[in-house]
Image (cartoon, rainbow, N blue to C red; front, side, top):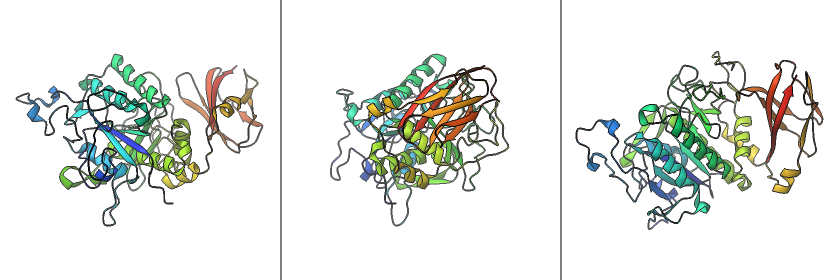
Length: 422
């Protein structure tokens, strides 16, 4: 369709990036084709050797990049591989990048593969308002549109119930600022409830599992629901290719890897394509999420997890299904974002409230499709309906008595509220 990510900035926090690799150098925002300027385009959150490596001698020389460097460098190959999937240029018919015309910026959050709550948080903060190389003069106008997060923060790295809250708040702040946060689900499958670490576990993150070329879930791909924080939140959101993914690594080499780390960059690149196709979507995180979820190809399976049936969509293995870039771009082209006054005026009314079994829904704006979701107090999805006829009537007799929360979205317009079932 001709949309390749032009005008969009993607970001990644990872092991760093081999920015001079010819497959990603032209897309680096700090490169003008002749000279490099790394201010506002690169940040290094690594200032010490991570003790988890158990190095015999602790010295900066242990890291091939050094510490606190002022130009992008990858000490582990992982980051370069993910960036190649997002924006890698075509070379002699070999296309590795989803959005080759998007620009990229980066932050190093891991020292040879090990990070910490502090380094992850520092990169999140920097993306909210990038700074110069001295960490000064922050400029939120230079923030990216989307961030890929192919990492997790396990207890061995120091993540606990206290600092996880800080990472959650940072993720929420980014989303509130209109920045789309993509997170790999993790490689702790195949058991249920293995999506259990930042940033995949957070509601504000768009969590991605991994499928192979046969469209079935990778055995390693972590599953929902999220029980580690007591939320019983249904994750992942969708799945994307994460088995046998070929991309670049350091020194002009290529590697074919498996992992949800390989899946989430496909989605970050897809977000760039959506915004490139329809610039009105820039900053519209809810609308982008809605497009990706509703255009995903539904996938089901035999695995049931904590009340989430594998035969239903969404489910705790595939979420809403597999990424469908073509359908998502086609849907993005149909979107027209209404201004703030129109969003405020738009109303969707549920009545009666409280209800016993039949719920009526009426709205005061023009729309041929509204997505209405109802969740219980644990955040579990109990009803998801596409409303096309105004007014609409829903049978909720299957819901136990209690308090529920609903949210609705219709291409840039959204709302939420409380529903009581007697």
